[in-house]
Image (tube, rainbow, N blue to C red; front, side, top):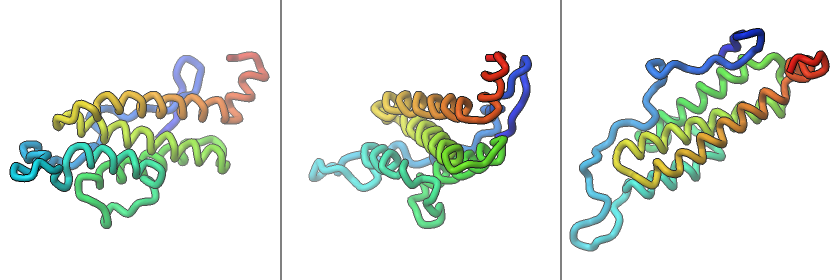
Amino acid sequence: MPIERSHGEERAQNWRVDELPPAIANTDVTAPDRDENTGRFVPGNAASRRRKLKGAAKVLVSLDPAHCDPWLRPSIELAVTHATDIIAGLPVQSAALNALAVDTATATAVYRGLLALGAQGDAKALSEARAWLREARQRCVSMKLSTPIHETAVAMGRT
């Protein structure tokens, strides 16, 4: 993610909506969540996808897209691309900032994935997406406050 200057301050340049890849692969939204005969949940239902996406959040960046469910692939690819872009745009490299960058990318990917699941009809995913968006925003703020550029600006009285 490139860094841009605006109004005398540096900030991360956000992706444009039309540049973003799909968050979740298109799936058959007409498929039932429950078996008609037994009433049990069928594999790949909305609730299991939501749980699987949130459960994979801790390791989303390290997963191999070739060895996961097809619907989860776009979220993994988004997390890896986003983390790489953020790390490349950091003014200095440190383990703490890199970890924050990975956390930010993961929270963003999970947010977008839950939003996509919500668009496919999973109402609970929409309500959970908001918490992941707050997490991603908080990580961005933490990353900005942790960079030496911000510390220098504070010392100079510019913020």
